[in-house]
Image 1: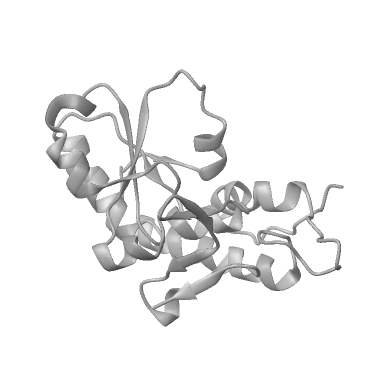
Image 2: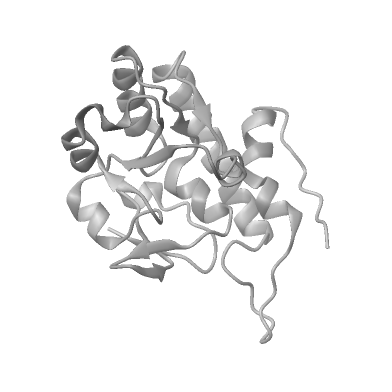
Length: 188
């Protein structure tokens, strides 16, 4: 069942990308409570706030840094060589990571192994990863910052990974950054 999500006048493009997966299908559990990533009005407000904050950070600090949305990442051709790089601190990574991601330290130990591969850094919302993406771009890597990063991942209804198992928990960097939708747990 499709759901119409009203878009604020700005930033239309990013908000559309961030909530596209959220708005496409409303997930309701058998007990009637919303499943993670479901499009409640509260979740829509959180998604809009996430978009507003990311857009502000992007305009202020990430001019010229190429990006990829969660939807674009998930729909990329399966044969495309790509790597997700978690640039968050180790204590954040211990709570959970995006499935299949490697740490920044693992990436840097890989040396030239990732030349020619699409490198997609992420963090909590996209600032730290965007700054790292800029560094990698200057070094000649093919790179895209994950727009909205781990928070956008949650708003797309996707699980995180913790010790090889699915998780709905995410270290949110700070209380002010807990913009997780219902069904997810923010950890400080």
